[in-house]
Image (cartoon, rainbow, N blue to C red; front, side, top):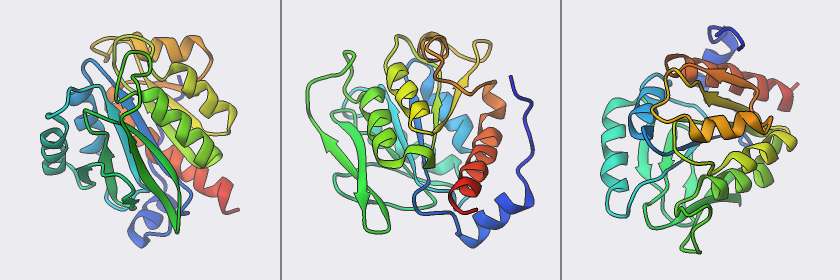
Amino acid sequence: MTEPLAPTCATLAAVHAGRYDRRLIIAIGASTGGTEAIREVLMHLPAGLPPIVITQHMPPGFTRSFADRLNKYSAVHVKEAEHEERLLAGWAYVAPGHAHLAVRHALFGYSAVLSEDEPVNRHRPSVEVLFLSVAKMAGQAAVSVMLTGMGKDGARAMLTLRDAGGYNLAQDQATSVVFGMPREAIALGAVHEVVALPQIAQRILVAVEARQRALVP
């Protein structure tokens, strides 16, 4: 596992100046144990990052209050995603419990796409749907994170993300409530780094900086 690195001055300067490339996006997938893991990650991220899109397996009716709770703990603004809304820097968007969340290109970045299509990998919302759309729309401008969760939802899509040039992190077994989804992604060779939960936010910052440098040499 790569040793955690502190965010550089360039990263912090980009955060404060809002100068991240508009193509950058961060995608997070989680299931069992994910509500607390997502909170842990978001509460250690600074304001001003590229848009963050989140799929957490959760029944309808709970995701709005989940997003509201996250918003209280984080410098990043958090809300439940709405169909066709523009995804803004400094914001995180949680998939509603009744719909898949995907992204598509929009003026100056991305917008959210919600659909009530059939479940994928027995889930709606599905991490697979989110990660595939991010791979297609963002490619090397994407940073994705697979957090704790049961099953394999999103693992193959994470490999597609890697093949498209994105950078992928997975939560380690020791800090996962259930190691199913991260294990599947690791087994497929989809993951660049396996990281303990307390270090994931820091590694996201480092990965975003690397993507920024690749896009804007």
